[in-house]
Length: 237
Image (tube, rainbow, N blue to C red):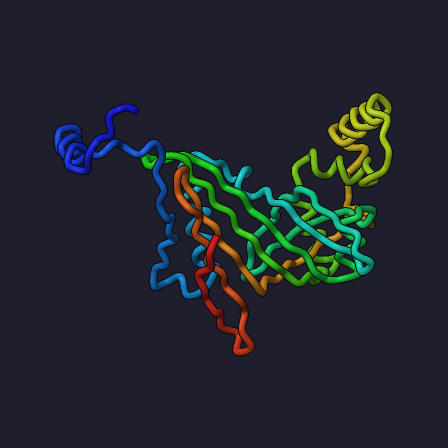
């Protein structure tokens, strides 16, 4: 049999060499809630500003995933561009040809998901904001104002594309190029088509998640209460 070290021998080696460094580390991430974070809108705006200050463009932070569901349980999920955050509502525009529109028309519900990833002096930051909303359709007059602000690519898209339909890329490219030429020559004003619709997404629940490499994520929820206030809870990852 080999030599068996006594407890005293082990203690002597510990004193000589010190405790071994752990191969990995584990910490708890923390979302620091300040006094003005009594509503989710303030925390949303602070996280948005922080992401922009660390190199994410406004285009990147305005893209989000929109999850929808039909009455019979058909799921949908696609990337959407936020048109505006106004009066505590998130404004979007979509095509009435799309599955997203059909789902929202049936249930009046949707869930938004923003995802921000960037780097700072502590390493990689990942922040996620999930927002459960009810959906209210905008009147055509307000929707037209958003269409007027669409970039050229957006106006052309709604002019030539039927969302979700099969496409022949070469044929679509020809239609696209002709449409752009006519617009630039003043032959097509690219007015708002009938299938261009707008919605206000009105939040009733927020969930903020913050994580870093080597950290257990932290999550905070805001739930709309009956008195129009917000119930704030910290929940486990």
